[in-house]
Length: 200
Image (cartoon, rainbow, N blue to C red; front, side, top):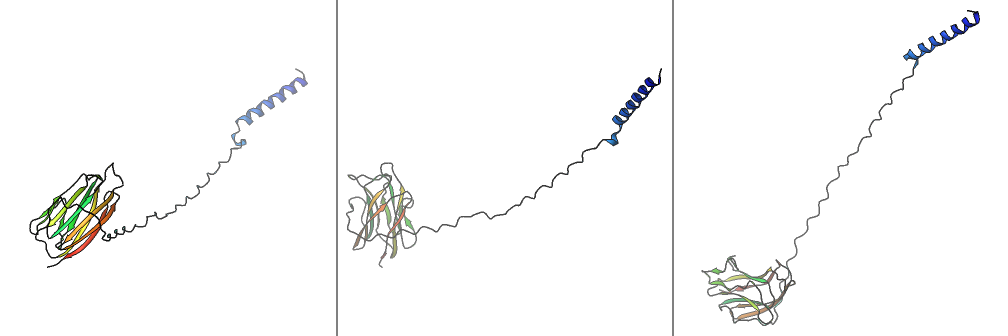
């Protein structure tokens, strides 16, 4: 084998050994530097107060109507030293409430006071029509002296008269008779008609 061939083989051998050494040399490889995780940005929690609605004031009581001349039927119910009669020409349940000086209330739930003779003797729950009006009546045969309070409550409406209508009220206190006219428009409406004092 001539020297030239020996030189080629020696060179090839050295190159092969070098490549093998390089392939096994882990220290020669550059490891990627780990990327540090970014710190999470702090979340700002804003503790805002919950908006509470302002309390709504109680609705002002509806003012009592002034007396005015109206016709009220007196052919239903009994008469007495005190008598309160209401009449209305539309479907719906209108309730008459009269509070005695003692605080006792005569109405559909408490129709009679045997001591004073207070009695709701006519109680209408369906209402009326223009040709056949509805009536409720309370009278006293032996009334206490003191202040009485007359109120109306629009207990329930009717599909035939969803907006209610006018109610005529007649209040007899001894020889004094006053009449009133008030409009009821919504279910649950309570209206003070008048207060009066029955003498001793």
